[in-house]
Length: 429
Figure 1 (cartoon, helix red, strand yellow):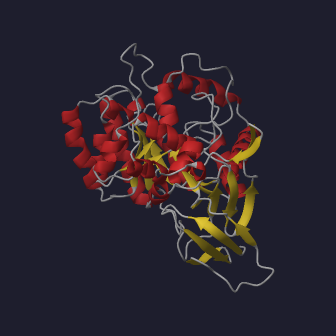
Figure 2: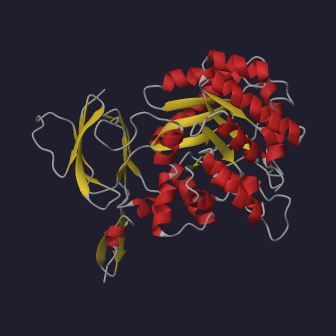
Figure 3: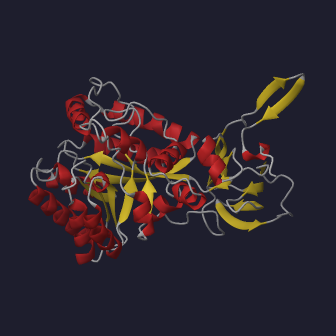
């Protein structure tokens, strides 16, 4: 735990303030904070935006940075990605899994992401990936808050993997996962949802299911998930990830579904980068983009978060674990370009996923953990537009990553002009 005073911190409201962190906890926030000792650590944010850390609510750390192993996904489809992962699993080693994951964690910290919920494949009876990710979680505990999800990638019933899933939970995996749309029948999918939710209730755990990651409008396991959530009294403790079939459902059915989801207080996690890359691959034109109905879900009162899902793995060849890239893609695909809507998209990679993960003491308020990111942006819209440098990343009052401000020096007409591309440059009339 460390002490730190952040001066001139830009706020989403447009105001600036000072933030005092003592013993790793935010002690005070005010327009001006004085009276600290001369040797007290100080950072001047210079009016740039200070935010709570980014939170990735949906990721696959066990598969990350494995792109091209054993070969490249030529079709770009979800199913070929699953097939490739199945081909790679017999050749995985603990050292390779841990090494790739730790590399990704360094990228995450540099991008200001200090909390990650990662799904871990439990269908291998050796639970090699589970053991490796638990090792990564222990190593990175001082820097990143991890939640591990027991994920039956090949299907709970299809792969007869309930015993593996229970063993993974016994080892310390935090959340119950599922993939009902990958079961052999709709009936098996619904049964898997009920079994997994009941298991979560028995153990007092959260639930996060890959649900209806399909272009099929008849893939309606989210309805089963909402029903089981309400039946078992798990409101607010269950998330449906992807929900891409909602993109293809007719409006009448969705008008029935959204109130059921709201009654269940079902959390939604969309994955814009991956959803729009994997979905619609069987279409010619018009071509569906596949992301779930984010604006409608927000309007219905649901908590919606965005996840990165993949970085350089069998499903996605790109990425650097930048949650602002995810938020930017989400607002473009969902056509959420209004001011309030863009703020919703920023919340979808900060406060909303923190709520879904039930993170304790998250945020920029007195008594919260002394975790924050200084962005080279003047406001939230600037941050989404520029995806700017993370000037400083702070964990429990300690600076754990820095990068210099990006300045562009132009020579125009005999004049030397400097810009950082932020809205400070704008002339308001």
